[in-house]
Length: 392
Image (cartoon, rainbow, N blue to C red):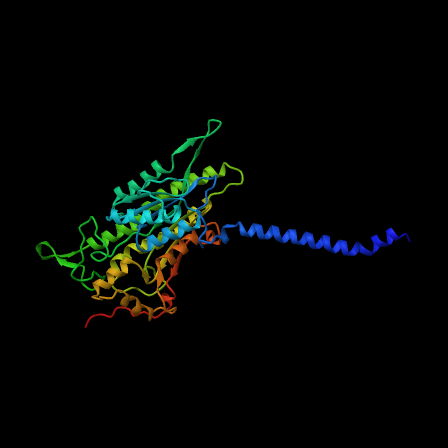
């Protein structure tokens, strides 16, 4: 065999191994570069706000600037799926604007000088505030007027057609109050001298001519705040979500995802123990939990899921007010006392509830969950809570 052929034959396997090794190194380098450029590797710890070519997904959140509502807004803003927000507050405009400034600085950077409701780049984040008592129809009118005017306007595109710049993708009814404890209301309802309950005589008064008269004012208020407001918000939101679904259907490979979420309270359905003393508010929230299954059934065909979340003890300014009412100088005392009833031994943060809303209203597995009342309470519903005993 010629020397040249012998040399080639002798070193061929070694060259082959070198080439294979070099190819594997290139493959690993490509994987590393891909992972290094992905949002998950961001040093900030939160995915950046994502700008897409599709319509801006908008969320309406009642009570969205404080307490649990604030936690919901925080969680949604971090997902990158929602770039538009209509945040509804009751009376404290100053506090609502302050929160909006904080939220925008988290997105745009701490050094950004942005006034409330005015943005340098609204394609990344657009917030509008609507104030008023959510139990009033006029407040709800302003919410959807704001959406139709500020978000839903169509613009002309090339070829003479038009497209919608934004679509309503989520409605969360979170706003609420404990009369005389957590907030004021426009109905003139104040904290009663005696907690209003069913069956203990606290609803009875003496009317004209000595006849018995039942005081329906507290129950009526809570029905307006939770029951009527929720139905109104759902009906108007679903109309706009169905319109968005129709627009997506006209585009090949496009689909619409919408969500309805109500925030309820423990003891407002027949599946678990009652919450003594919560008779009046619970009578309104039970309508929320009852109707959500009907909404889930009718909305599913449009890619919309509908659920209720039932938080347990959650750190928020509402619980701070409850602590004050009970004469606790240290607001942490009420949480320390509550932990003994919670199997997990801890109370939730408002952001924890927000994370659940983000899961339900995102493009992941939460979209298959609908018609549910989800207890997010650390197992509180599993514990044996005492029920009210009749007075001797």
